[in-house]
Amino acid sequence: MSSKVSEVAGPAGPLLLKSPVIQGISVGHRRSLEDFVRAIDSTGIKPVIDARYPLEDLNAALDHLDRGAFGKIVIDLN
Image 1 (cartoon, rainbow, N blue to C red):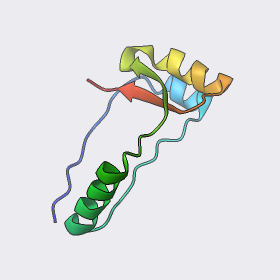
Image 2: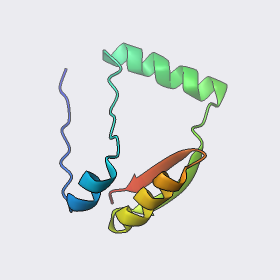
Image 3: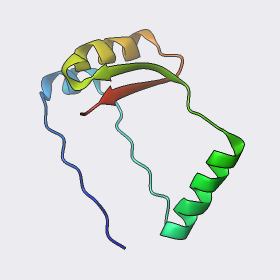
C-alpha cells in the first residue's frame, strides 16, 4: 500500500499564535476505505461546512474559528 504525502508551506506565525488543530485520518486498507465511501454515498451524510477560505485568508479563517464556528472551517490549498 502506497501513501501520498502532501507538503504545505505558509507563514507559521499565525498558526503558532492561534494553536489550531490539524487532524488527518487513517482508514486502514483500501477495501475498508471503499466500504466507508459506499456507506457515506448510500446514506447521503454530508459534513456541515460553516465557511471556506483560500490559504491567503488564513488569518480570517483562524479569527472565524476563534469566534466559534457552527460547522467545519475549510482552507482551500489550491
